Length: 151
Image 1 (cartoon, rainbow, N blue to C red):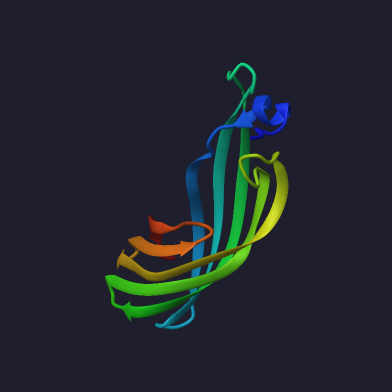
Image 2 (cartoon, rainbow, N blue to C red):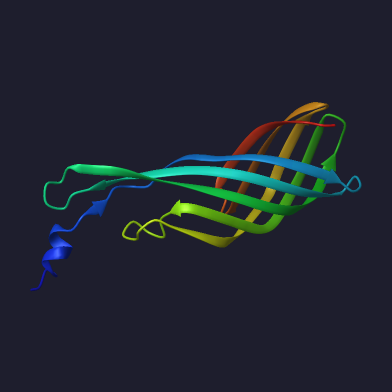
């Protein structure tokens, strides 16, 4: 049985990648009671620890930042004065500064396509409002919530 080279056994390695989550600011342009165009700008900070393969001691921390620009189409299923239900679909771009491709890769800058789909979203409120969404894509998977203001 072979175990690989000495470098693969005693080489430096990385820990798990951690993130603070994506912070998003967006603008909606409502075309009518049913259709809106949305543009979201998001920022995500991440980090991981690097370790010595010989001593198993932490040798440093690598960090990265991702910036997302995501235009989306929003379709309102229900549009009342205080309560709205909607769905969105978007296609945009993400620029990754110092982000790893995988846990064994070195950090490098890169650009990639971003996709987000939200089949169910709700807004509640008038001038100031809250929202909650369930969706899946490259920006988030699961729940997304926040607050907003209508101009």
